[in-house]
Structures are given as structure tokens and as C-alpha cells.
Length: 271
Image (cartoon, one colour):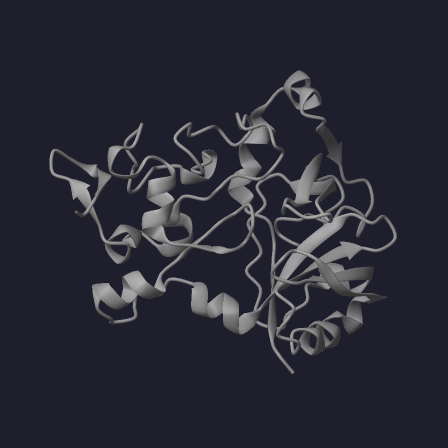
């Protein structure tokens, strides 16, 4: 059977929201809540249940932003100061084990090809068997009773091979060939040079910072550089991550990018 890994949402995408006042939250259809019951407020970032008395946000989230008939959004809870879940391969978090879970397996075209509802204790075996099918690209897990999104499951081998390993001794040419950014909107691979070209190529409208201090606060999908709580595109999708978040601090070396001679904190493409 094929191993899997479960992914919580990125904590940095939601942290700035907690600093907004109630009026600003209401304008975004977001509500502050306090957990008043144990095992009833599951956080989609940490993948744990909030403790009684803990502060959360209840907000709409587009969990399926793909350009397909299955595009969808729904409500999620996020705990204040939540840290993104870091689960082991084949690990199912305790918060899921006591729930009824709906599982929806998608292919590379973001079409559902199989689905199931089962107890949380049966999730691991179902995922392992489902990922045996090479047509399955990823799986979304939902809490079956309320129907809201829980997390995403990926094939463990694929997730590991796409990750950047800074400690792996290999040539820059090989790293450039193997290293790919993860497009936050679609979950697909994107060539590093293509990403910079998409925000202006060798003549970018704005300089591209190599090591921004707070990359999690900005969407890097185009040269607008919008704040995460005010995406100008207005399409409801999540932000595109800066490569440093997925590739490590020397991401630009693997992509064949050199710092600007007169401004080494920003990028220019090699000719």
C-alpha cells in the first residue's frame, strides 16, 4: 500500500487576520469565536481541536480553487497562534480519529474519481489503498457531518521528491532541473524561471526579493505583491507562496538566478 501525508493550511496566511478589528473581519465574512466545548472546534492549520476558552476565527476558505466543476469553498476554524501541522508519513491526527470523515480523491485534472465516508480510524488504510491508484493526484478530507474541509492528503513519495533538500550535495545544474516551486493555487509544479517570467521576467515591474523578512504576509503570484488579506485579483484563491517558503533560503541558486550586483537582496535572471 502507498504511504501518504496530511497537510494543514499555512499558518502565515491567517495570522494577520487576528489583528483586524471586528468591522474589517465582518467585511470579509469572518467571525471571532471562542471554543466553548472540547473536541468541537477543529483548527485547519494545526489539525488539532481548540481547547475550551481558546480564541479562533471562523472564516470562508476556498479549499478547491482549481479550474474545474468541483471548485468549492466553505467555512473553517483557525486557532490564534496556530502552527502548521507537521505530521509523520501515514499519521492521522487525533482530532480526526473521533470524527466521521468524507474523502474525495482527485485526478491531475482536478476531477473526483472516487470518494468514501468512513470513521477517522479507517482513514489511513483508505488513503493507502487509494494512492495505490496512480490516477489519484491528491485527496481532500472533509468532516462528513458538517461537510467542511479538513485537510489535504498527498502521496508521500511525491511530496518528498518535490521538496527541496538543502543538505543534498548535487550540482547546481541538477538542482535547477529537479527543483520546482509549488503553485499554491493549483498544487502543481512550476519551473522557477517560469515563475519569475510570470511576474515580469528579466524586466520585472518590481524587484523580486530573495529573502523577504515576512514572506507569509504577501501573495507572490504577480507583480502586485498584495497583502494576504487583500488580494487584488478578487478571485477568492489563496496566496502564492514565495519560493523561500518551499525551497529554502538558497532557492534562487537552484533556479539559476543571481542577485543584482548593486542590490544583492533582490533578483535578476542569468542571461
